[in-house]
Length: 124
Image (cartoon, rainbow, N blue to C red; front, top):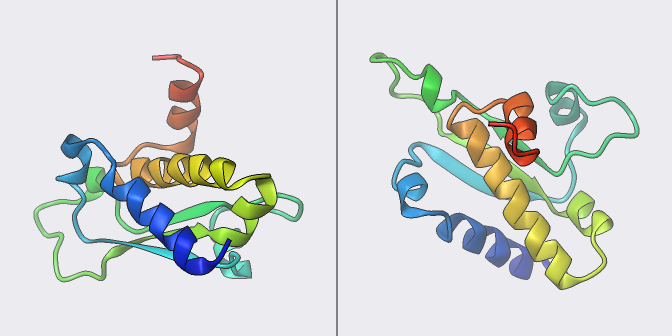
């Protein structure tokens, strides 16, 4: 899939979020890169053989206090290469992008990977 189409799908995944979340996205950039760098993989705590589809870097909203301000935007990076490698069709790519975007935005709101796994398993 060409980069422009992939980016359009990422933008759509963000803009189709429920309004209650979309209206609370503050100081956040979402970008697309081909593959994660070594530093990004290390930051995510991944060793060799593990795939990184997306990465949230920033200060989650749950940790922002009164003095939060004048900081660079948080950043969500969506990695096109690993997502395409995992999928077999454009439809699968679109579904995976939607999942990864929501996962990384959950981190922006302060939800941990462990809690996301519980939610996905239906363990409230």
